Image 1 (cartoon, rainbow, N blue to C red):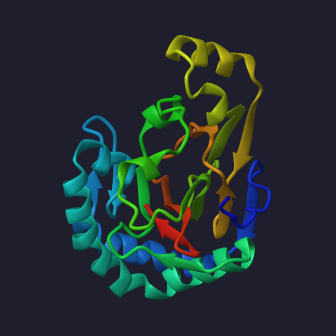
Image 2: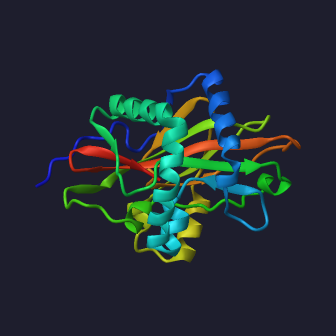
Image 3: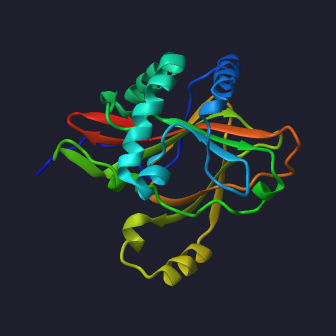
Length: 241
């Protein structure tokens, strides 16, 4: 039987201080300096990513995901190498295990939401994070049972932002019809976890969740977050997006 490291509070949300407000402003400046690299992800609302995202790109075409990862990784690493080092060190300390970046996979990248009243509606998907199924892992020594997902808020709307979570685990619904899943979710209490600029939110990704709708969006609002996931493989937590 394989022995995996125990993920601390895998069923709970943890919050860690990672960046100062000044560092967040510096990162925001870099994100806007790379605006020509933003990828528009929805034709109807101003939602973009900076970097390849497995849940979007690999879901459509795995090779396109790898191509985008190789295109955008050097750009992100060149401008924000210190951020990726900070992130890896913070997660290694929290997880009490080594962390690394899988060279063939996308670095953690950015969600960028600009001001739009539609974001006040619950239009974000209600889901579990199963992106690890969309990409290739080089080793059979890979633990898919204890993934992590994380969000680092860089800039938030004036009235905040956060995550909705329902206490429904992926294992509970893996063979459940979609209609029954919807009823199960409706029967569960929804918890809202507010983001704070500079704070890293960590959770398993295997509990049903959703990017919470914004409140009273202002014309100059924006929501910029660094997004990523981790899978324990080959003796370390492989961080990717």
